Image (cartoon, rainbow, N blue to C red; front, side):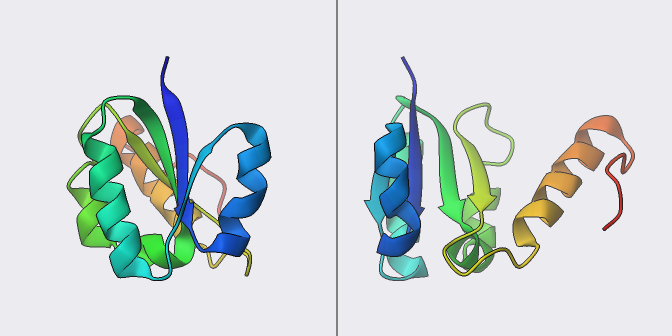
Length: 106
């Protein structure tokens, strides 16, 4: 059975433990990148959630896994809230898959 991981600062990932996610605390984007690469090589993870503020700094790193079927790397808002980076990534992925931007404009 596949697992779900979340990588982010302590305050952002703490609540996900109760949901059964594998949580990984990172003090900065560099540390988050190291954890991301380790988890991406592990065949047991289907989804890796990455807190937006780290995901934005690791765009080149996450791009390496964009065409791989697993794991799906998804950016989510952290404790500070969303800055729109995650939604832009979803919009881009949908546009790539469908061939047009079918999501509503904000």
